[in-house]
Every structure is written in structure tokens, then in C-alpha cells.
Length: 100
Image (cartoon, rainbow, N blue to C red; front, side, top):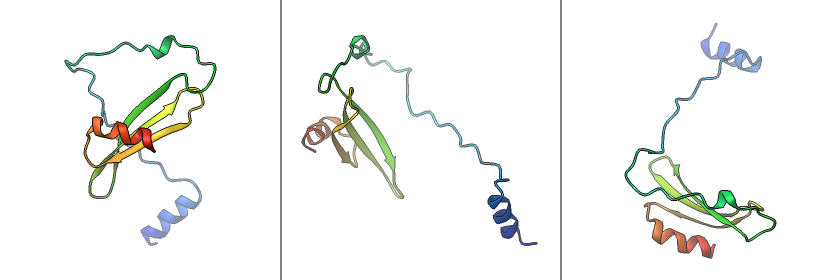
């Protein structure tokens, strides 16, 4: 029997074992830079536009990475703005995120 046919039949019957993905650590917690306190943890949000939060992540494309900055309203989780760039230029990315 053809291995491709066996694989397809096992897949159709949900008998294939899913591969575990290797866990990749992307955060370096052992750095010498200043760590700021979490002031937002003490807040009680009762409405929108009381606290905005931001996050930066990278998106892997076929041949490169791009960086994505997103601004969110913490209460409604609505996207306030975002910016996408090939280079990790945080200062230059924050202004366009407010304009989107």
C-alpha cells in the first residue's frame, strides 16, 4: 500500500499523532536594562480610553521578518492603531501606530 494513501487514511480517521512543536524562547529576562513597575496592575478599569497598552511582535514571512506594533484599549480590547515595519525602529513605529 502506498505510504501517501496510508497517511491520508490515518488522517481521515484522526489517528495521526500531532507533532509537538519545539518551544522557542523569544524573551530575554536576564538583561541589564531597567525594569519598570507595572502601574496598570493597580488600576480598575470602568470604561474605554482609561488605559491603552502596546505590544510589539515579529511576524515571520517567507524570506524575512517584519515587526508589528499594536496599541489596544485595555478595557474594550479595541485596536487603537498599529504599525508594520521591516526594521525594529520603535521610535519611528509608534507615531504611525497612533495615526492608523
